[in-house]
Structure formats: C-alpha cells, structure tokens
Image (cartoon, rainbow, N blue to C red):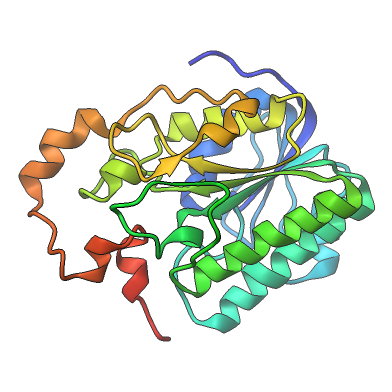
Length: 269
C-alpha cells in the first residue's frame, strides 16, 4: 500500500476502541503527526505518535475538549448496530450534533463521518443506487445516520465544514456471507478511502459508498471520483469459499431481498 501523505498535524479518531477504530489506529498514524484517540473507555495507553482524550459523545463539554486543537476528525464513534432509540439518540444523534458544534467552535474544517449502508437499506438487492437516491433507512440506526448526513450538510452550507459521509458497507477481514460479497470493504481499502477524504484538495459535502472493488455491487460510486479513492481489494477472491459454506438465499426472506440484510428485521426493542 502506498504510504499516505501526512496531511494533518493532529487528527482525531473517535470510536477508537471499536472494531474499525482498532483496525485504523496504527494505519491512521501515517496520515498525521499526532493521532488523538477518543472513546468512552477501552482505548488503553497512548503509544508513540498518539494522545488520548476520553469523552462521552452525549456530553457537550467532554466533546468540546476532545475536539479542541485538532485539524480534522475521523468520526467512527457511536452505536454501530440496530438498538433501542434511547441509546441511539444519545450517542448517534445528540453525539453527532455535539461533534459538529465543537468543530464549528474550534475551526475544524474537515470531517470524515462514518455513515452506513443502512441509510439506504430498504432498496432491493436487485437495484443499483447512487449517492443522489433518497435515503431509505432500514431501522433506527439507519435513521440516525441519515440525520448525521443531513446535519453535516447543514454545517457545510452554513459554516463551510467539509464532510465525507462514508456509507460503510461491511468492513471485516473477509466477507462472512453472500450479502457481504456485495458490501465488503477491506480494512486497507477503508484506510485508502479515509486517506483520500483527508487529502483531496476540495472535499465539499460528499456521500461516498464504503466498498472495495467487488464485482457484485448495489452501489454506483461514480459521484465520489473527485476524492481520488481507488480500491485495491475485492471480495471476489472469497467467493468460492463463501458459496461453499452458505446456502442459496431464500427470496421470501426480507433479509435476502433488501440491501440492509438482517437489519430490516431487527427490533423492535
């Protein structure tokens, strides 16, 4: 993988204790002089090139302190699965508002916001959509990410804070099932995508599908060419193994019909 440019002095990574935060922790140090890590807990000790500022996203004062002094933000923090509305409200809705308010106050002008494919989960797997298609969330989690996309657009239009809303598909070491052959995003391609968002000269407000170079896909990413993201990995190398261990989809099952998979059936809580 080509070494990324150190485009920022101090870069903030929220959700640093989560699965993707853990995968990106070492990788993102190549993009900055100092990587500031934040989560509610579980981040561990600061290593070389790191600093730690713990924060609850629902606490405005803690978020303000977390954002002070950074040049850009990679926002992975919050709840990443379908859940009851109360926790989603605190972490994903109030939390993203607190983040953008802190960015406004401290003059941070670029954010990479971890949105989700579940913003459009009620489109069918037989369809191909692009960034201009209306949101069709498949649950309260998807609704919260749609809110974050709209909020980030407001902060771009009003205050000039550029944001890449990255609708992450399924980012794991390898695809777990047949659905993920379409949605898979390798950890290295996730880093390539974030690096492109951080380094492109003009980001604007961009909605980008977070996916690798998969042969089967439901998402047209052509509207994101201005950021320069070129995925290098593909789910295709896993296809034979995935087919061997999984059965054909039941097309009477909504999880096999809609792009959101099992999220379309989750809850109520």
